Length: 192
Image (tube, rainbow, N blue to C red; front, side):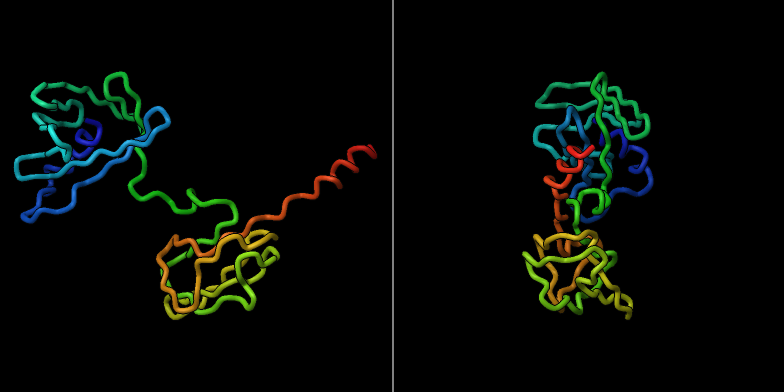
């Protein structure tokens, strides 16, 4: 219901196609779990992409669905990223999430689409690196871009190889930071 209410405004402006295409997808977070809704724009309006579900009516505030022959009416309200379907709160998730927000600490992501032209000599999983040390070079738009280690640590993953083409946000390598020396910290605390 939330996805159909959100799609309602777009369906009036040529959302349907002459040829079948992939369904549209909306993702929501509800009670800590991610849920996905799929729908299609058709010549006659919106259609749910779920077995046994028929859209009877959909506008920005009210959606009526027929589920296995039973009609249900849903009131939908939106406040920023929060969507309320009756008393149920959902958080709308971005269709194109920022890859940097989903990365593990120490991940090196491709800043743009390009080709890996060089990997530092001796760079392999298990290699020790220093913060700021050049690890790989990416060619994009006829320029070379140097990718450096974000922290001092150990390479735990390496997905880059010379000649490999990468998309923006592709994971190139992961550098795990060296943990602080715990015994030295304890010794300092005892001296105080």
